[in-house]
Image 1: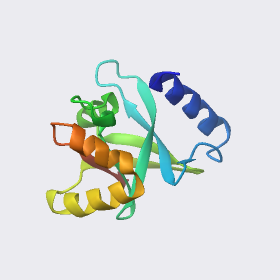
Image 2: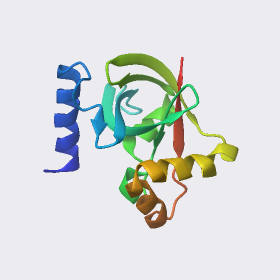
Image 3: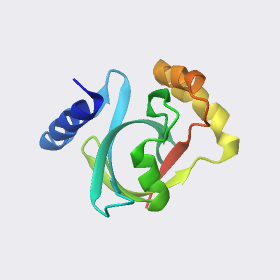
Image 4: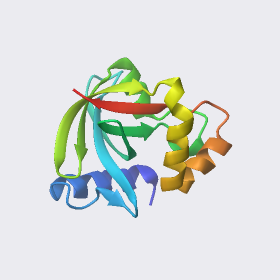
Length: 136
């Protein structure tokens, strides 16, 4: 199964269950994040691994270590207003890059929770953005 198809199935189950199913993959929280497409202006939704940060969550734009940013991150750069579903909770948020001073410690925490993120950090030649989904 392709990641794109997996994401669509995951999103369907997550929404259909009201967030009771799909909000965690193993020990990792997963949020449904809705952005506005920068080219189409249409709502776009993606399930994204997320981690606690301040009063909300942070997501890594690792794109599995690829050299390009994920489309959802490009959409957030064009329009920072997003809708988030985290389990059964829904909230509006503003996507902001994590401040430089917080990045190293936050990355250590993320890699402890999700070893794959450490692999992506080593693989990627680009600086992987960390995005705070600050509650609006």
